[in-house]
Image (tube, rainbow, N blue to C red; front, side, top):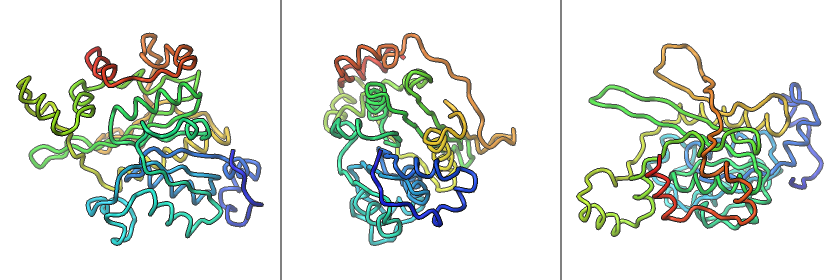
Length: 299
């Protein structure tokens, strides 16, 4: 837990009215590791800062692009600059009581000390392989982890898919990320190769679009829905105000009328991650590039 100066309870009056002062103290001494600071996780970070979270570790190797500005509230001068440094500056300017650490790297290269120090992990990275890596770290160090995801797909001018998913992993209690997610073996392979090697594989094995890594469609409306759900689940974990929901989904084109639907999910007894939790904890083994490719082939 983070050490903070005496709390200004007036700033948090509206949430203290239903959470209480004890819960606010817990919020303000909690450290959250944000893996990825794109459209969804940047919003989660800002909302947590508003609520007075103790410390944020912002981790992302990328820079802001002009195409990010349709869903992230950033000034135009941020374009071309590091995501973590600018988001850190923004949060510290408006919420000086929140400690922010900006780390320019990928989840796979983040020192283990950060994973150990964090109380909660939010995995908003772009690649399947990095999500698998973060999932293994959460299992090894017994950290609650959230996996938000949003997807939009249209075909011939008609919207076919507008949904988001949020999974919450609680060590020893709920299924992990690898218990339910079916991984595309070609996507895992493509992520493990640099562009040159990817093209070599494409030509050698007569692959077409299988090795393409698509640029996902994205809008702020969907990101904010999933981000809001993630923040609420984080508050549940911190304050125990309610039980976290292991898996829930939002379908924007469903006629059910439900905003978020719970999805029944059971632990996979053959899960390559959490079913081997004791072994992983003892030797800290993590999936290699070859392991990830084999994993995709089995699924």
